[in-house]
Every structure is written in structure tokens, then in C-alpha cells.
Amino acid sequence: MTALPVAEARPAPALPRMIQGTLARLALAVLALAVLLLAVGLAVTVGEMPVAPLAAAKAVSNGLFGTAFPLDPIQEGVIWDYRLSRALVAAGCGAALALSGTVLQALLRNPLAEPYLLGVSAGASTGAVAVMILGVGGGALSLSGGALIGAAAAFALVALLAAGAGGGSDRIILAGVAGSQLFNAVTSYLVTSFADAEQARGVMFWLLGSLGGVRWPDVHLALPVAVIGFAVCLLHARALDAFTFGADAAASLGIPVLRLRVLLFGLTAAMAAAMVSIVGSVGFIGLVVPHAARFLVGPGHARLLPAAFLMGAVVMVLADIVSRIIIPQQILPIGVVTALFGAPAFAVILFRARRPA
Image (cartoon, rainbow, N blue to C red):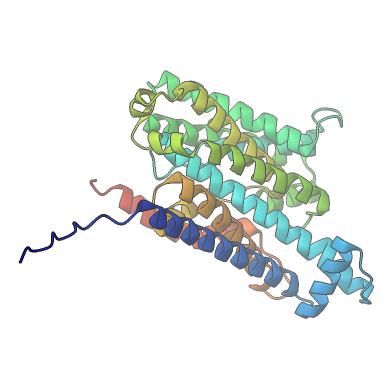
């Protein structure tokens, strides 16, 4: 009796695995968005005046869809005009800063890179303070415009210093530290020499990071800047993957290294300048969040950029909540809150960076 041939085992088709991976990423994205919405909802209901979730939902519905749910006018104003706009600005700023840190860490191949270490934030602060105190531009230049000019000046100075020192990521970081100290000194000089006591107090509180004065026009700046920046960075996710192996490796793959560096460095500077002009200096978001996102989703930028974007938004909203409730009847600058939690994380990253690969 002739034995029947045994059918050879065939490898499982790749399509189901691709579908599973896509579904898994989609599920994570939906979960992250749900967490962000939950954080924004918590920010709307928590504060000195507690608000029931149903009342918050009615106020948001009245503002977004023009419904006419009966609410106390003061309560509705607090929810719509103050807390919701504040939460959305916090989300946009956190997302943009985390995105900027992720891009800079890839371009410079340095785990400590972020907009504030590169002097961009200090330059933006100087430009914004010059507009606020000196009236630079004669009223034609907005706070955001002054911050953008200051960030561009800081970016140019750091680039020149780094190029003069021989280039390299370490030289860029050192040049950024020097640029930050210079622009911080100029800002302090402007405040102490030209501002009265009330102006100085307001500026110093703003420089520590403040969401107290944000309203809907700030939302209309923060969210589009964050979303457009995210879209541009995501289009270059593969190039950023190549940059993690070095500029030479990226060039060997046909990536226009110089053009892409100018584009992405300029984009991160613009995002940081826009956010500084709205909320002041808020440190550690651009440094710590990319590492946390990388730990959760891995180093591939197609996953890392969305994760950092959403995680930065959530962290910033939660930090704003803490700043409003940690001390009764007093609001801390949000930069103080992010520093309290970010400094220990920074120390951990610093020691990990010292370990041999």
C-alpha cells in the first residue's frame, strides 16, 4: 500500500498579522484619546468650584452646539470660558513640547535633547518679554511674533556656536546651554531694569509657566500649531528612524539630511515659540515624555510620535489640575509642577545616558 505524501507546512500568511498589528495600534490610539478626553473632563469639573459632570456636559454642549440647557451663568462661564479653554491650551502645549523633544532627540541622537536645553525657549521668552515690557514693534508685533523672533535668534546663535565648535550633538547641547544662559540673562535685565513692580511680578509668574490668562483665542493658536506640527513630523517618521543611526546612514538611504534638519529644527523652534508665547516656560515635558512614550511603544517613530503627542497632552492637563488643587485657594505656576515631577525623571535619564551601550 503506497503511503500518501505528507503536505508540507506552509507559513502563515502575513496579512492577518498586519491586520492584527493595525488593529492593535488602532486600539491603543482609541485608548489614548479616551484617556485624553477623560483628563480634559476632569480638568473641567475639578477646582475651587466643584462642577457635576452632567452640568459640565451641558455647558460644553451649549458652547459647541448652541443648545439651551438651563445653567447658572457664573457656573457656565467658569466651565466654558475658563476651564475648558485652559484644558485645551494645556493639551496643545503639552503635545507640541513632547513632539519637539522627540524630534530633537532623534536628530541629535542625544537622550537629553529638548527645546529648552537648546536655548529656543529662553530666546522665545526674551522676545515675548521685550514685546510685553518695552513695547517692541510699536503694537504691530504680537506676543507670539516676538516669541518667534526671539526663538529664531536663539536658534541662529546656537547653530553658529555649534558650527564654530566643530559640530556634533554634544557641541549643539553645550551651545544650547550657553545660549539659554545668555537669553535668560537678557530677560532678567529687561525685567529688573524696565518693569515696574506689578509688571515684574506678572512677568516672572508667566515665565514660570502660567495658564491663568488663557482664553479661546489661545486655543485657536495652540491646537492648530500642535496638529500641523504633528502632521509634518509624522510625514518624516521614516527619515527620523534613519537619523537615529546617524546622519551618514540617513544620507546613504537617500534622505536630504541638510534640508530635513533645517525643516525639523525650524519646526520645533516655531512650536516652542508659539507655546512659550501662550504659557511661558514649562520645562521637562519635552525631555521626559518622549522617553516614557519610547518605553511603551518602542523606538519606531511611526508609533513614537503619536504616543508622545498624546502622552504630552495628557501629562500637561494633569499637571494643570495639580497646579490648581495642590494648595487651597492658590494656583501654582504649572512650570513648578512639571519641574517637581520632571526633575527626578531627568536624573534617571541622565544616569541611564552614562551607561555604556
